[in-house]
Amino acid sequence: MRYLTARKRAEGKGAAHTGTEHHWYMQVSAVGLAFLVPLFVYIFGSALGGSHADVIAVFSRPIPAILTGMTLVVAMRHFAKGAQMMIEDYAHGTSKKMAIMFVIGLSYVLIAVGLFALAKIAL
Image (cartoon, rainbow, N blue to C red; front, side):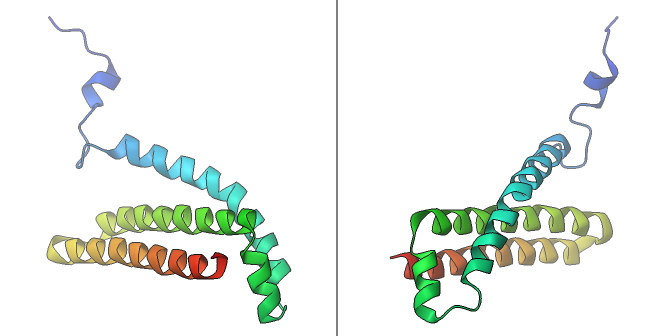
């Protein structure tokens, strides 16, 4: 006779077998964004309305550039995971696969373009 707890019986029973990991990733990235977004808004707000040289000066400093890059990467990964979960819940078949590939690809393209632009400004 096997004695299994409710947790052991439920472990690995989700459709993708990664529900817990996904949930924790979303929780951790949401907490990270709760700290990063206000800092980014402050940095962006200080540069808003300035001349081109002022904006370049703000984002060429290391701390604003690093915080902006971190915010971009964490926000886009959070977006991709959240959109994937939404698509998995409401779409089916080939359209689900295509939509998930599009969302993940879009997030990586936005990360690449944003980091490239930030590197051009900072360097």
